[in-house]
Amino acid sequence: MLSLPLNGQGLFESAQENEDKTEAKANPIGGFIRSAMYIGSTTDEDVPYLQSIFGQLAITSDIELGKYGSAYADLRFRYGNEFQQDVSELDLREAYVDLFCGPLNLRSGKQIVSWGSTSFLNPSDQFSPKNPIVRSPDPDDMKIGTWSMNAKLSISGSSSLQILWMPLYQSSVLLTEPFTFPGYIEFTDPDWPAPEIRNSSFGFLYDLRSSILDGSLSYYNGFRNNPKFTLKSASFNQSTFAPDQIELYQEPYRIHSAGLNLSVPLGSYIFRTELAWMAPVDEAEENIYLPFSEISYIGEIEQTGANVTFIAGYYGKYILSFKAPTVEPSGITGSFPDLTTLIPPGEPVTPELIDGIIASQIDAFDRLYDYQLEEFYHSVYASLTINLLTDALTLELPGMYNITTKELMLSPGISYSVTDGLIIKAGYSYLKGEENTLYNMVGPILNAGYLSFKVLF
Image 1 (cartoon, one colour):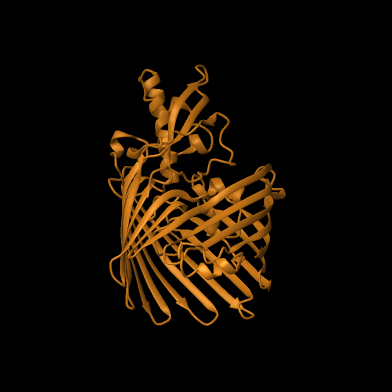
Image 2 (image 1 turned 90 degrees about the horizontal axis):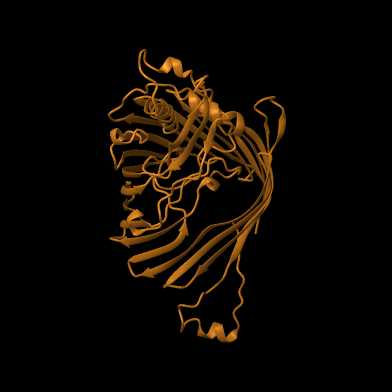
């Protein structure tokens, strides 16, 4: 974004600038105005409709306070219609203050913090909340700010240690709206942790940067950004054994997470790798809804030319102490199976037995969401970016294919800078998966072509 400095200082303020370094040197105000529309199709009749149409105003302020600190804020207002619902949102996306104390920098406030260096996925980043439903041509808009405090200590010219404290929990937006679930499924208010010190999350990140190698080592202990679904109550028709109502709610859980990132430049190539481990603080055997511990690994190569950038990589995941699910997640994503087929012969029908069957369905859905239905997962991804007309025209073609689940993601796009600060962008977001996969559930709702006009100021 282009910033427009608004110098409101008078002669006396200019004269005192060198005497009082704590006064802001400038108060630049910038931002953008965007108009966008998404055209999708209804899932039942396959009829094109306006999935989303909105206007958006973003105002940013970046204030420098000399050698003592700085501040940044990002305020956004969006108005329109999305998924056939009126939208009028005012969102303070970020607002934080930096304090410089020699080799120690402190940052406090609402901010977006992301760990990891690979392009498509960052499995070592388990705490940054995201909104995958947001309708925006900019993938960075999926990130959600949360209140946190960072202390970054420069150990040397090439290394630093960052300590992160997050006293408040901020959840990602889960894929439950605006998707259609069976009529008997009802989502009640989530059970978020109280704003108490004991519910804080914390972590550290050690960075090492040099001309031959960039690396980082991280550890996190706190609540995961994606909560789990938990059963609150259920009722069944005694004659048909069909569910009358199943109430679910979102419940966060604490995890341990560690990550190792390495980047090695070789000429026009950059090789990146990431290794991450995640484990719930409580054992999964004690809580059926908790995920298993897992290890993720990524290998990636990037090649940059004069006008072309190409990225290709592999992502894999291994589920520790894996146990195959006993049921398919159809009871949550489709129609609930016939209870008579799930009750062992001669077993008396008791409330505990019914709760156990429902719990197995919810567990299967949680594992579908967390990609833990299989012991191993293998995915490949690639991204091609071409800049033409002196970088005024940009073609983008990112895509990812999950070999294990046979899920495909494509999001081609083209953007053109009509003039400095005026950008037109068009593209298509496409998700497709086989039955009983996440993309099969959300693809028909989220698939859409878009057109965006954006003015920077």
